[in-house]
Image (cartoon, rainbow, N blue to C red; front, side, top):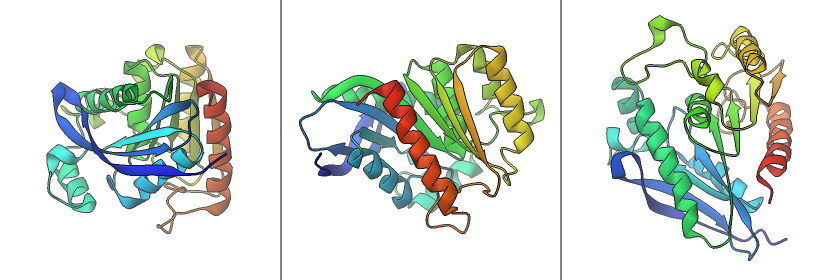
Length: 247
């Protein structure tokens, strides 16, 4: 199988029809490829997340990562845009869902798209992946250490007015969750609460916790990077998406 890919910035139609930048990575072969929407972490639409999109392309997926912070600071670098988004209270949930839906629609432009769509998110993107899997129709979702899926009433805001766990009955697809045993957000207790909610609603899911890993263990350019957890996590992602998206 060829590992040739093409990667570039494109424009997608997001929430309310807004045109926002997104990073597209796609295989250059003639096969049939599932789509994956990559939801970036709180540090933003950065080179690390774009590398994740390219990794999906090399493994035979059409990957699109929408810039969820674009409206908060259109001309800023990823760090400044992330700071602006945090200062504004975070990415509004409705806007996030609309942007992810727009990214998923973008796959229709490619004759080689297989017709299946997955979502994956890291850190705040893990919460957003869970939220989108409950509010959109997708075929598979991966939550990589998403904080505040379980949230107390006092943690809810105008921009983020719901705890995603409260939408579990509407989860549209199988879910893979990858967590660090040393993480505080989500804590191991929050992971247990989420697991129980999924069991209660009869939702297909696979959870795996790495006892020696903390938050952001996939982040190769951060001290939190955990080689063993990341390598095993990637293998679980490939197996999960192959099972539920095809390709």
